[in-house]
Length: 148
Image (cartoon, helix red, strand yellow):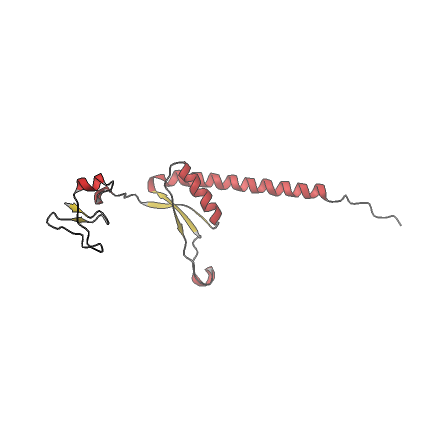
């Protein structure tokens, strides 16, 4: 078999040029493909990516993606589709961002994302309590009402 080094198409041995690519580049052997560091069609990544988590926050999607990549979990982020008006008129009820990972990593990725969400929520709650405490400390003390 011969292959196109540009698009990876596979051809019979009697064909000389790729019919799929512009300018019809010459086809090469499997050995030539490997020497160029190019995969053959049957060597391509066939993993199926599935949803591990969703979020409406574009900043958190970056945090989640970085967290998963640090744990050697490949991540694919897909933006949800939205209508021109809003969810009520378009019927789009999907969250804005989907975090997709290989099927075999779905459970582990979902667990990592949920732990990160819990930690983020705890940090936010702690910040709210600290702000409320600071506000109470800086409020002037209530003086007793003047006696008549």
